[in-house]
Image (cartoon, rainbow, N blue to C red; front, side, top):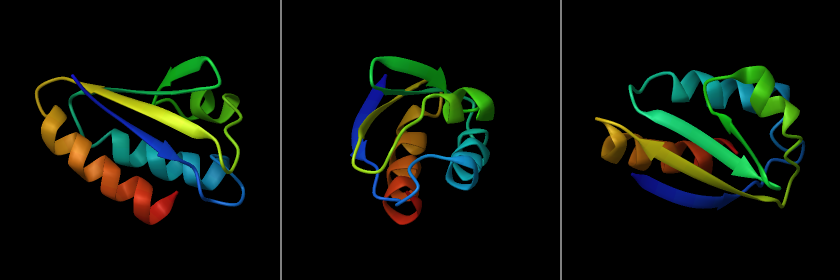
Length: 85
């Protein structure tokens, strides 16, 4: 299992467009990817669940990756978060 934390920098938070980009990115991997914030967790491949979390700019999220390609997924998701969110 791999895990990392990230503080959301996007001014609209993790709303429709950025959440859609995250879901698209998460679906590239066979590992189970979970995003947690404010005491709530959801699978990163489920758009409505991610949007329902209401993650705002400045909030810290914890991303957990578990599965066959977790090492690659962790590295690439970290890069995605830094460049897109």
